[in-house]
Image (tube, rainbow, N blue to C red; front, top):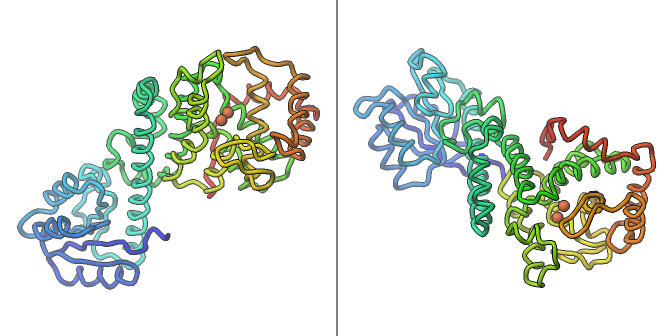
Length: 393
Ligand SMILES: [Fe+2]
Ligand SMILES: [Fe+2]
């Protein structure tokens, strides 16, 4: 749905002229309601569901900055665009001090107003998605004390803070400059990147797994001549494929012995949890699907949905091979890393059973084709950045 669809905008101005011009500009796309004072504005906000407020700073009675503060406190999810007389707002830093998203100076024109409103509504939508994600994550993580401690560390991590700016602390005070320089969607993905790596610290055997699987998947995607967009989706999904392990108790991940059927079922929830986690975020549905289906088997005996053959999304089939290759090539709690010849033997043996036979052949060709020391490539890339150069939907 277009983010501008059916949004309700409250226009607050004591003067009829600017109120009416804003109404005429905005009404074709939005539901517009009006208030003539700060007090009336707060009443409307309490009785109506409002997405965005345009607020004149110079009004008799309750001053604009008082209204601003009241809106911020009582309705933190509502976006605000300040309308000022020429030069009233000395600088962008004044705006940041007020905690506003954007401001327009009178006299404004249609283009400026439309652009500011579109930006504000997009921000609101991105923030809603991110809030849903964090709530969902909180619920998932709530199952596991280790993961809760981990999340605590994530929130305190300097690396994460560096990437996210103030996103986790107080998202309402992000400056318009920051918001424009780095889209919320990209920041969400970067957050996931750090989260995925942090989750690996739960399982010492899987350190670097996400990044290596992303590299192997990428090499296979190259070989398959996927489009740039598909290639990037494969790589992002590969990086995030085990994100749902945040919901799996650490002792199950590290168990050297066999798992009970009930415990196995919990571990096997991770693809669905991962897919559910990224659902509220602004990322391509293909990425979500690939995360959900990375443990499906070609013969239909995998999980979570028992899809078979080409029912399994291509990115899921690619990741499945890269994932198995990495898992077999590394030490696991219950066995040492397997030799390359054994790994190739296993991939061949399970082609057409667990793995897409055509893709397996192509992956074996990648292994043979001079990129034979594929781990070295992966190691070199482990330090390279960024994993997500851009975000294609
Ligand atoms: Fe997995
Ligand atoms: Fe994995």
